Image (cartoon, rainbow, N blue to C red):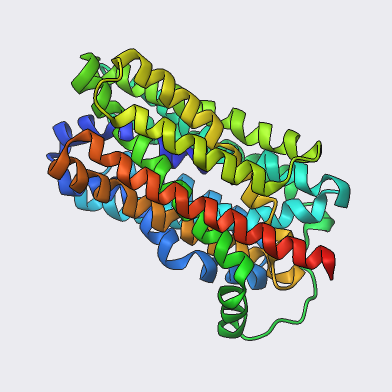
Length: 380
């Protein structure tokens, strides 16, 4: 439900621009302000959750999303909508950095990897579903409907949390002795494992948002699709990513090493992304490649989220390591689209393949580094 507030924006941009007169620059901020907040404060918010209480932060973040999205639906200017998006971003990051720690607490040790795998589908499933809903309901209506739908979804989620999660004593804050926040941030940031996970996730997000962000433009420019049709196709391609998330969990449960998933996906998807952007590829095949790309690259988040308990410096720093991962992810999401736009302006669509190739090479190198650290731990 938190990811609904990410997915509602891309299909709504034309309606917002028509109704509120938003410039392209303002539209870009509406899209990226959530990423910016997470990129700047992911680990700090995660450490706040460790002290404030993870369940409380999930409740607070969900309530904030309800209020901000509900009020945003009645915004009379782009500036007012940007303020609401800022608070939606705070609500989103509060939820997504707090939940993994709770999942690890309620799952049996044998099921923790499965729980983290299932958790990784939140973004493609939530954002993709909301993109699909918005693409269907927006023609003939207003972007305000999408904001109200997202607010209603979060309100239902808040009710479920109050009824089912609030009374659960196993979710109560644990009495753990904490070190000063800056010391814990330094512990996580200086540990090789969490840093490599964040770097790998950042490279993944850079490639993911590059392809998904510009896929509607490719459809409109090359296939002559309408904006609505392009949004629906993009939503479907986004949701397909869930299959990769779940497949990674199944493969790891059957003994496939994490490094094989990360490096195998990176190498094959570098070729796939090149096929999406280079000249000479039949246009319908580009859409097929985009679907394959989304599904296969989906193994990376599951491989990385399940690595957090393994590479966190201490068990109580899994939450902070999650925050660092989220920061890496959102830095990649912020950098990918503008760098791609610059490359495309300079050298056409084929130039975008340079970015995806370099970023996926970084992801593969980070995967190999994580594998080496895990082997050392086993040998020790």
